[in-house]
Length: 458
Image (cartoon, rainbow, N blue to C red):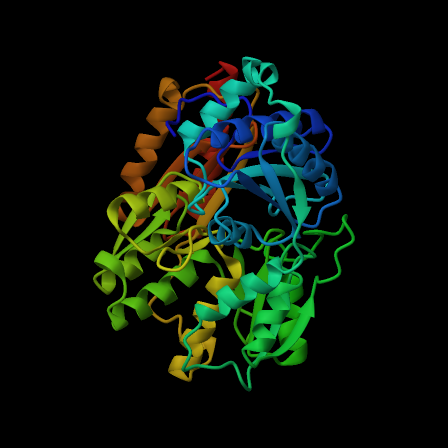
């Protein structure tokens, strides 16, 4: 996606917003179902069926039925699998030979929000070009003028063993010669889509499991639990004297890991652990890790110290995947905890990532706290600014002048990144450097400069 493309429906990760408020309405979901069914129905030589999964939020029922109605109305069958992690939906889409997969989730957002994202038959997220095509079908009204005869209307049915298939798949990614026997593990499922499969796969691999955030009621997803609120898992690790803690987000495609001391390992730290291990075992493709512009400079410096390159993309795990597929890399991710192991998966998978870290611990015989040496996180400050419109940053001379001055000051031991959010009317100012107090000063200075520039007063 080019930074300049205007999206009316799709953001950087599908469509997202407040439930029952445009664009997250049943009417839009119905149109989306019709549009994606029309796009994939025209493909020759494939079974005409689309998979629908969801997380545990209340509005999921509403969107699930609206999407199914739209898809069936275009002559395509629907398979509903209920609450499953996003990576499970991606796996099941290709495993069950479906034309496409639809995941209903707002990921780490509160329950009032929801979202819809699409996967192609190969389990990868739809490219921008396909999303743009679906968007055009809806905005031009073309999809509302297309129909199929009554005898070609599709059917919908539900399968009950989807989670079991995904558990088997996850276990196959864990080395057969290793076990989690004797390991005490805390898992916080965020009252989300991983609430069943997370504890199950860990127990079946031999761990003693203490599960939390595993009682979803439609309204408590991500509610002061999960990867955005790792304090719960930290407290439980200490209280229960566990060996490790795992905190998932609402759709279980990202993970935060906690060591036995209660220290938090974010996506940058997890990529460092896995890259070093894969490099040592000769399995890191082209000695390269792919991450976004938001990953800490400390990750880049640590990787460089062991002869591993860091390739950066724009924010969004879809762009990490695109770069990995284009250039043949097999490890990438985001600071937020989306980690991608492209040899085994097509999208970020919180449980798979956790299993890789647990395998590393089992293989080394060391506690997690002993494995992070070599990585020094640089102070990083992020300031968010509400904006009325997203004016091109390069056309704000006062901001560009301030950024140049700061970059000269920081040199090779710091970074500045200013960008607009892909999903909200916000600008994000990120600054890294060795001196934390100075980094705060710089970030606030640039934020103020940006505000004045956007207001036309500076």
